[in-house]
Image (cartoon, rainbow, N blue to C red):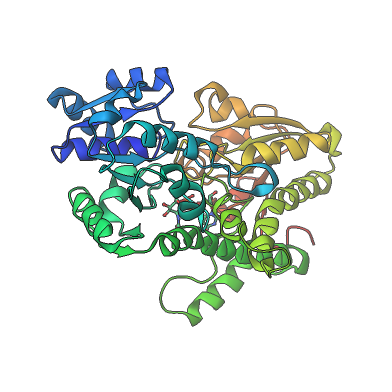
Length: 418
Ligand code: SAJ
């Protein structure tokens, strides 16, 4: 149930493991694209198209909008979207609607696995009640851990938690997932699986917020964030503690999961750290806009007369996923300051070439460190620009090389607001 970033790789992987799989999604276009062998996803997914085609060719995978197939299913995997709703609380309407369909049609002894990301307590308070009255539905929460651009690799290679209220049901789900997951599978309870999933992403969000907060401080203090970061990270010999600063945190998980994590806390319970990380990361577009504004003014341009290109509309480098990307938000902030803004991304064909995007512009603002920007022929691009300002919000470009080409180079976290 649910043929998106999570459901598609799961469905075709089980088909490849010789299960007879029906993918159900209410979106008819999505289902027919899949049946025609095309992935209805915005990202390039190595190996996934081939697996889909193999599933179709073997007859083990088909997509449909018709939930009728539930009646003959031994296992139902629910992978519908659980977005952030009003007041930054989880919106479980799609999830409970899908579960209601399952409860109505699937056999009473079917194993029902929820892969959708959940807030702590959702299995017990939102999902289980939908199945109440069916007499002990076999309910499992196995939170997805896939990342767009690496859906198949992550599905196979990332360890997974299997949350079950009844350990025997957990072991049954473990046996099932072992056929598609090569990494460690651990049975736990519903709540532990729920909390770990969103806490992982909240941890990353807090770490990025620390990097962003330090970069803002460096911009005002006249200090180089990279030096600060390197020195701090030398203290820890494993993974870096301070991550990379940028114009914000996008994607489908990090902007949402920290809110899920704190959503069930009673009024007044301390959740400030998680909320502050969200505030810092969401506020980075304003800091970035201030840097672009300052760079233009320092070059003698009033913002209302400045024409800038925002480079990078996806949420991460070399990926074509645009969900919650900071680039368009930054573009909007710059327009509010009166600037003329052109938005470009090599993965968004309608935005043209980089040369077209920069023609007549005063500033190139690099939001996403796509290889196409890092390795661009800046010497060749220079001639078409008006003022030659580069604002690098990910420290991705070669500062010295650009300066020697005559560009004014500004970067986030390098005394950008001194
Ligand atoms: N970012 C920074 N600085 C950094 C690293 C990332 O600003 O140092 C930004 C990125 O540009 C991007 C955002 O953060 O806009 C999120 O990118 P990401 O690489 O941290 O995470 P996602 O959203 O691609 O995938 C995450 C991953 N979770 C963790 O690493 C804990 C992935 O493993 C999960 O499967 C996925 O969420 C998910 O589906 O939950």
